[in-house]
Image 1: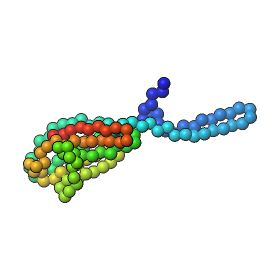
Image 2: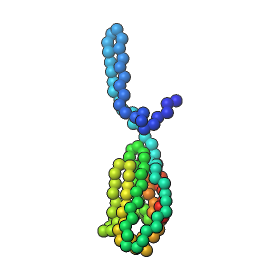
Image 3: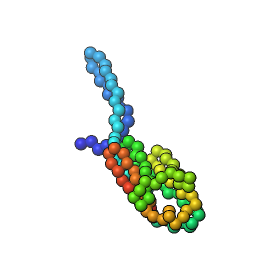
Image 4: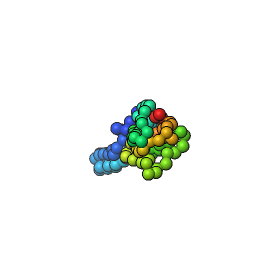
Length: 121
């Protein structure tokens, strides 16, 4: 049995030679894995009219999408709620906080091989 990790993926070449000749081929090994949230959930206390930034890191292959939810519903983008995306990272920034922003925020990382979530209060 072969144990594959992300680091074993890459380009490989096979070279064969004998008295009659030489042949070679190149092939790609892509290691797939389910999306996994690597940031632990936590609680935050922030004052009204302040700003909060929540960041979520994730791993997986192919790269996971990160979706933020509040109280089980997708968190929309609007004038005071901004979403930022990088490879393996999703950030949401909420400005001018009000009491309606109280709740459970959930980072959802997903790709075609799986989904995982972590919450922040």
